[in-house]
Image 1 (cartoon, rainbow, N blue to C red):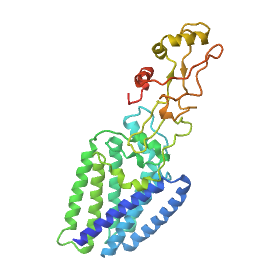
Image 2: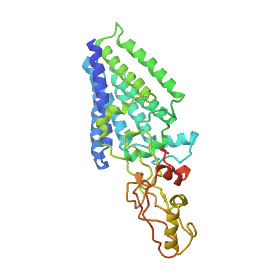
Image 3: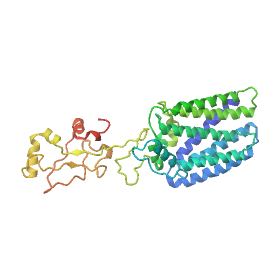
Image 4: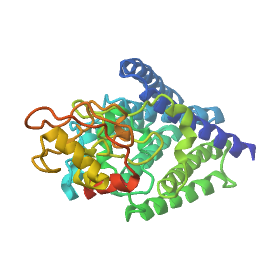
Length: 377
């Protein structure tokens, strides 16, 4: 069984570790990307040369080398996309409410150059291994391509786990092309096709007439196809698959707001899978409900500060600026003790105002328009 166990362990480790390295490098400051891309390109050139050298090597070592070269060539495709070097002509989110074929067209535009690059790399890999006895590297690349395209279509059509935390900050706009739903109609097809191919690869690996090279080579391919099946299931089952690469995600900082976007908007949870946009920085102070709750005490103060006017007459509402000049973090605005530096102007002499008194949760709820209440209410 060692002829099967070692290739499985080797394939799992190289796939897991190389994926983690790419995630880690993509989360580093952007000024480091050119060096990461340079290193990946050198590995790409060495791997293509290695495939050409080993295309007729039918030893066990030849199978190991070919598998590694195929995986590294695919790694260049991933790192060039997630670092933003090879993406597509569209570099902005899809408009709100965009659906159907137009939405699909926008999705193609954000990764068009990436997809063309994969096709070019596939042609090059086939060319350098043409008529060779060792096709392990070629089929490794093809299986990874299948995993990539199938998973990408599934997250576009809708799955439970979108794994948004893997996206670096400069590709935040890609989140508008991810759809969250329990499952989509393509998912059963992807699983079925992958499972059928996996079954055939396993049978070829354990066939009595298989040579040592064939047994190892088919085991590598079966392992990658098994990962394809597992990766697809991770998209729909409630399991924290992202925790496999927690060490790599350490380079990903908190998402920063886009240029010109207030800090109170577009906040992304550190560990969640969904983007949270909140207007909780909006706080309505001095409403009539609050004045009524405090009764005659408010009447006295309103009379002294407005020259005898009854409470509510000619009184302008005081609205705290959204996401700006707050004395507390944006997400805590509106809670007890938070005040604002900017309020709407009032006519006449500047009135004497009293400090905003702490409000109960019920008072806060009643003071917010229904559509602007945080989800907790």
